[in-house]
Length: 166
Image 1 (cartoon, one colour):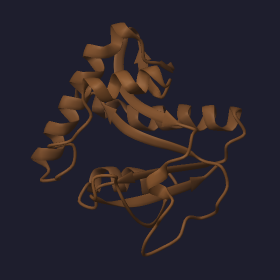
Image 2 (image 1 turned 60 degrees about the vertical axis):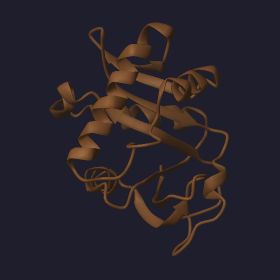
Image 3 (image 1 turned 180 degrees about the vertical axis):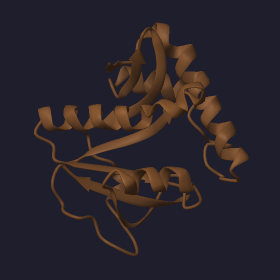
């Protein structure tokens, strides 16, 4: 089940953030190393009702921020174009618990996000990732996302931008 994150989930989500940061570091990806998501990020996401968890049999297996308010950093895209200018969902802080990584939880979580989008009449999803995060880039491409160009985060870091039309 994909549901809003609640106070009881905070430690599990923070542990998933930590696992993801360590995995990225091991892979040589300079993402989530210095300014990765933390407790204040999570609390803000929870207050805004952006933060979701994938829960199965009482275990938190994944987390993501699902945002329907647009994304300011997506207003300017370089070396490409968005597929369209229609309303979209933004996914941030998409991560799975490494202890359950081989269960297909990233795909399960994405399918559930897509269902939420469709239920709201949203037919586009946008997401970005670090250029060197080949695991995430391959996952996105395997799941129907198209590389659209490059965007800059608020801190100036460059990211590869993807979009999927549902």
